[in-house]
Amino acid sequence: WVIHGSVPAGGQRPWCVLGRRKVEMRRTALAVAVVVIGSVALSFREEEEEMHGRRLESVYAGAKQKLSDIDPIRLGVSTALIMLLGSLAAGAGIGGGGLFVPIYWLILGVGPKAAVPLSGATILGGAIGNFVSIGWQKHPRANRPLIDYEAAVFTQPGELMGVVFGVLLNIILPKIAIVALLATVLSYNSFRTLRKALRTRAKETAKFAEEAEKQKSLSKPLRGEARGSDSMEGGKLVSEIEIASRTSVADESGLEKQKELDAVLADYAIQFPRWAYGTLIPMTTFLVIYKLLSRSVFDQCATWELASRGGEPKGWAGGVFWTWYWTPVPVLSIFWLVIARIIKKRSDRRVACELYVPLENDLIWDEAFMAKFPLYALGAGCAAGLLGIGGGMILGPIFMAVDMEPRCATSASAFSILWTAGSGTILWVFGGNLGWQLLVWMMCWGFVSGQIGQRMVDKILKKTGRPSYVIFLLGSIIATACLAMVTSGIATIAQEVDNNKPIFYLELSEFKCGVDGP
Image (cartoon, rainbow, N blue to C red; front, top):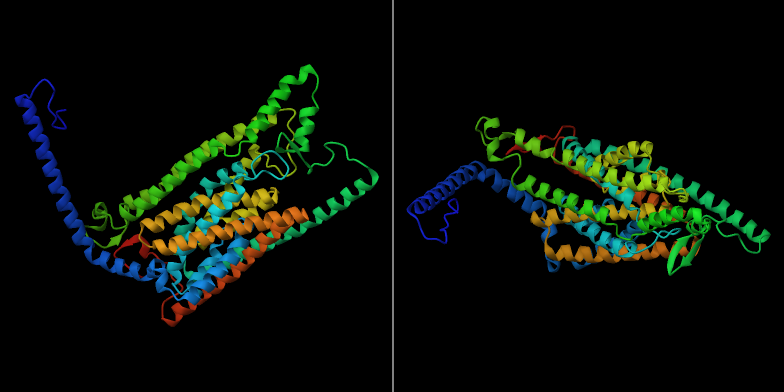
């Protein structure tokens, strides 16, 4: 009560009044100090902030327009293309940013910089539309969520950590190098994904032929003979393997094993596992706070970095900037270790259950797999940050390569996009680089395209029974995005050449205060 200057209930004492006066003096001195320091900081940064503000205002002006200010023909054509390509991207489980940015830049005419936040808003709308469809769906062959939460959540910290390294390289490397890497990585991913689709289709054809032969020889298949068949039990979709496992133990000595199996299956059947959202929400919250503070407090022009620049307002960023820049690495590593421990514990419980039989495409989280899978996530994040693309174009093919169920692979990828797109859009809005009218417009049409894409895929799978079509769709979308992004990248380089700007240099101005250019 002395510190805060309050008076005890028993009455006011002289030394209490003196303590309150001291506190008031300290507060006044602190306020004066803040004003003085703030004035000095503003005097150092006034000129550069004005120039930087005008530059940001101009490059992002297209994303802050009112709908009435946009050419109706441009807006209509852009929206129609977003609906078409967004539906295909949603069905493939990717965001589609590689397709949206060229549309907003070249057709809507907002410019390359302003196209990025508009693309992010569209991806977020599509991700929400995706989740509304897939969040409540079940695995095609088991009583569990369609989203593979273990794969989706485990890759999230590694992907975000990789983005830190990738963005650093994206800032430094020349545009021509990024375009070359973009063409290499996406064309390779597209090739591998389409090749996987062909192989999966061949297996499906062979399986259909085998089942047709069985139907001819057997009037009624034996229970549990077909791994991929489904049954309904108590109104829930249950795989034949689970039914066979529960019915295979009838003697009293196996009751404990039966209870253990039921407990494992019940845990696996939770539609919205708390452990997944309990790690994703704080991790995403940390990322948003980190980005906001990076822009407003721990930037390269922070006043406490003046000493490292010899008291000059311009110059290289100091130690505080770089310490804060790498803060996500240890924080995300802690999240990663916690998530790995949770998944390993769940996996060990399944392995210890003698009656549990995994499905053919289930991921086995043993030590060998958990040792190499983080490298996949790190590589995906690094490539996404370096090339300026969504993680879905990298993670999707990786999930396919480890033989995940195709529908579960695209759902896990789409679920991951929900969190990254959400945090990114929040940052664009708080940064004042995205107007509310275009935000709502793009999110709404993105939501509709997400719904259309998922319903389209569901209908195709029910009609054909071929998950390989999902892989074909993913590979085709990546190839299309590769072509669109490389074309727009070449156009940017050509424009820089016309303006006599150097294209072979390392861009380091982002790490300097008040310094533009190479």
